[in-house]
Length: 243
Length: 221
Image (cartoon, rainbow over all chains, first blue to last red; front, side, top):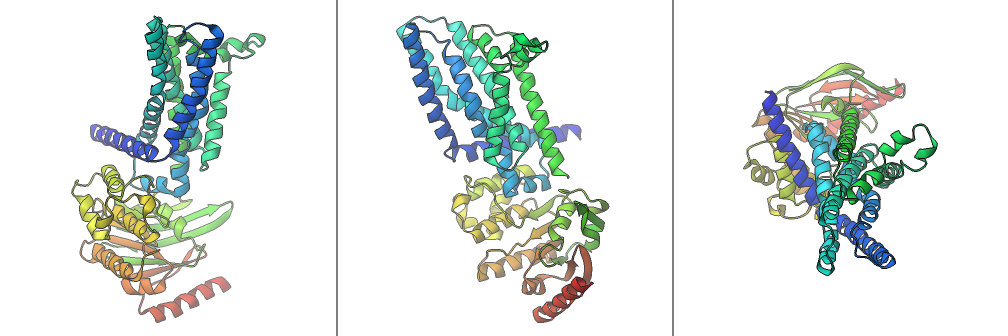
């Protein structure tokens, strides 16, 4: 019985992933977000390269990371907020679709979409390799860091989307929380809780990846942050399911 | 079977549904009538397990085919894509999608995105998703909304056949008394959160007169 439920949840999760991917990619959102990301990222990165006079990959990652915390909540804002607004969520609850399948499926689709949107940024690394001989370690680690950061911000965005039925509010809340996490280390030297707060800084964690180190504590942090956001989102959805 | 047993629910200290009792047996179409704000949607949400009752309980055979009042779906998906998704959620045999589309009269719209459907066409897609999995119970909230006269006739036939041929219990919420008179075996009238009558509908004019009298009496009370 338990195995049957797990199989059903897995099947439902993949069905939600497929549905979300269709809904996302038939909307203009990923294309607009992708265009914005690469226009701004390309401009800022080329400026950095010109200023430094060196063909380095490292400046790419904090720039891309910051842009992702602004843009990923736009990709996730619709996920639960719009379903709550239109009543589609009620229909799924009435089936009933397992909450876990709903939340994980939506997060997975948002994350995959973010990775696809981000993928053209690897061209910068290809171009660097073509012109020079950059160290590949930091490039691979940097992109791994961006992938993990995207996963966490997609989780935070999904949580924000579960809290409201307004898409703009969901995007703003998601961005605000991600922004707090990005700057969590700022001023950490001045307070006793500083080291703890700095530990929550996603920009500091990303910096470690961009330096070429894939530290298990950094990986664990992003995995835990993602899992915590998804559990919180599932709790909110479950709570709204039966008020 | 669909059964409400003493369902009550308050919002902000105001009781919007009070001690609602009724039963829809297999093979029966029961109309759920009431003026706006009477507590129909709140009762339906409690029956479906979407709202926790303060008192009482609901007993509905699962899976339940549910058509919400304002069916939305997902604009970017095609009709077939959407129904396949819902079928995967409900897990009926895979060939049921085509059968449900044919029964709800949307087979010719299979490849059209939901965003490009009229209100009536969208409503029929909603009806098709409710049919998936051949549920033993249906809760249909204003299923004829937005349909043209021919589609209304077709949809009435589908709803009646669900109960009379398929043996399902069908609860149908509607504002249109003629519709209730045409297809329901019984009607439950709810006013101000209380069931004020449960009877056979009779003809449309008779039902209209009785409904207005019941609502008037309840308003005065």
